[in-house]
Length: 105
Image (tube, rainbow, N blue to C red; front, side):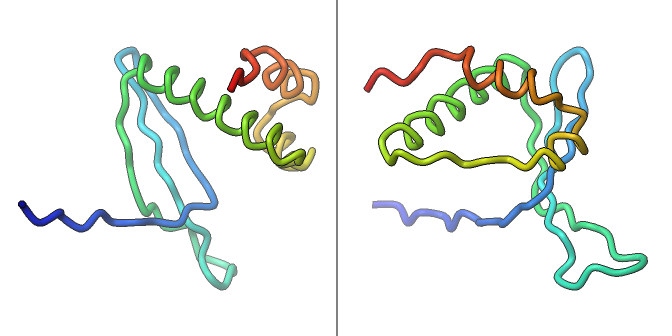
């Protein structure tokens, strides 16, 4: 049996997204261990995807989060500060999480 190649693992606490007409790139970034002047987040991984792939992945991620929250009876809140920094209104945020189909396990 062929030996499996080691798959790199990364931690990310930030992301940057950009795209053009044919797809997008997601840069996963990590904050510096000791923030300070001149210290910038490190890009730890870069993923290019088609919009079809991004839309499908977004749906599956949303469904998985809703499934875990429902099964565990918990919620993973995102602060209004984070939403504000991303220019996401609370109404848009709540609409998004209500609109995809519920997990039907």
